[in-house]
Image (cartoon, rainbow, N blue to C red; front, side):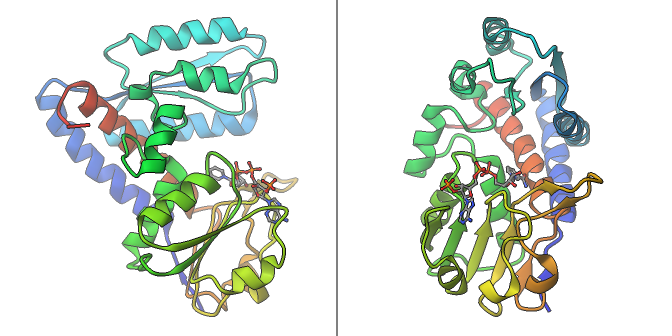
Length: 286
Ligand code: NAP
């Protein structure tokens, strides 16, 4: 039976720590602020934007939401980002994905000032992640590392397998584990012998967008299994990329979906927003 890692509780602890920190910053006249931009009315994105707004309130962060119609042009969106780059009360800017297809996500990512790029998607911040010289930690991978740390799961020297090589999860995840001295294998849709590779993992991070793909027979007994996947069934019920039912009896540690990595991603976004405010007010060397 695996120890179930409670990401909700860990995220609440981080928000409480941030609330204490932002209270001290307020005494110095600094209030971190996060701008979230949503283009269109994707229902899942609405839910995420609301979660972020609540997390800001709990962490002592000022938040502002920009809810733009689906036919907003790329130029209009870039103009909004340019104005937010220049606002001193906004420390972090987050364009919520997905954006409508007529907007180039790369142009949007590059329009956000690297100093306000709390998602850590801008090429400048991606380069810093490669070097291990972080301004902002990538939110989801940082959330995974924080959960492993909180559970006392040693990463150094371990065989870590990351399934998925996206720019937002798989690649930065592998980098953080490498910087933490793990031996890292990255798998993707062309990987051969996935089951065999997974069975060699002391820590298995699954971010493949394939509902319940990883089953108990693919897991090394006692391994830490981190399920990043978020999938929805017809009734809007959330489940992960790991088949929890067959994986849980084999694993040593496992994250549930929901209540595992998801809340930690938002907590790390809050942390990055506070870091951004400190950097912009020269309260942090970077
Ligand atoms: P993505 O861009 O769709 O990438 C999926 C990755 O999985 C790709 O690299 C793909 O390989 C690989 N893959 C797909 N099928 C595979 C297979 N049969 N065997 C091995 N690898 C396979 O997804 P993403 O943006 O990284 O997100 C991954 C999941 O995490 C999604 O469910 C997403 O909703 C979730 N997510 C959760 C959070 C959170 O806060 N919990 C945050 C972000 C994302 P190729 O590169 O070869 O196509």
